[in-house]
Length: 392
Image (cartoon, rainbow, N blue to C red; front, side):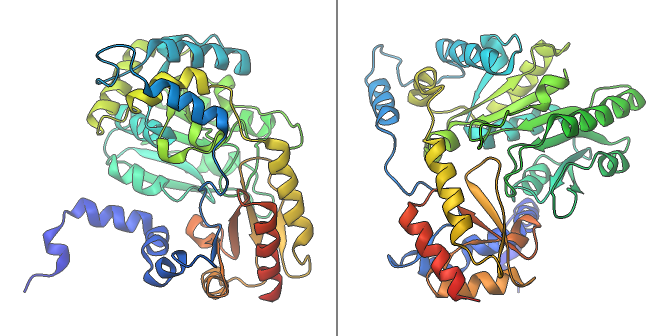
């Protein structure tokens, strides 16, 4: 007798294993039922909890009105929006970006996928730092490549350049640096980024070809305490930036983002073509036509960062400091919290039954922790802290 797995591809099972604990969490029937309960507060993922910004709604509505017969036609790149993004990025990052350096993508998710499809061959290695965003492994596997995890330093979650150097092999093709970092909220300082770039430069010389640096930066405008945001893309010519509007203006379901090529990249024309092929053949990973046309207007908009920072501080003060240790995030809209037990899965499941769903840290290789979204209202965060304090 054949079983269920005999009817699906080996790739599907590989991706299932790559997503691992996150897929179990997402598909868990008990948690699914709890999510349908209006009295249960779900702060496990980065979904909006408050109405969209009026100016964002107005921009999308305005660009829904067609001006030309082909307004809703196939679109690989809207030149005016690309130019607007490039100009904004040039002012922000200080690099000489131009419109063709910007590839429109289906969120940062699409930008990462296009980078893998266009620049990494089957069997080559892609290195990322851990704790990590839970989709990296599956995405690398889907591209036929080999995922390699390098741990951040314990407790402080700093970039570890020595550990990265030890992980480099002749098959290393790409390194991913995610800052501000999900799930820890770290904004990696420039000295740590320079150390990572130094490793890449040395390894590239040994290989005789450049190792790509993918700067995964969808939270780069969500930085707290007026701290600067350094990007490794400013330090390394063979770098790309993946960005998403879903984070900064809270429209994740609209799937709007871009992939930027470092203007100093020597092989930029060939790389751009390879990335475009990755976008097209990866499933036409461009944003929808309305979103592309609206990007130039949306560029520079942001949710209220001081209000988000105030909610971060409110939660930190409300949690029982004897039971929990919150790693105060420097950016993103998540906080990583050390739990009073190493068994974060059981703790979070018990907490869900009491009315609060958090993301168990082990899903992101942050064992003994839980990740909480700060996108809730202040009152909802107060309620979350109350439930957590009552659980210990």
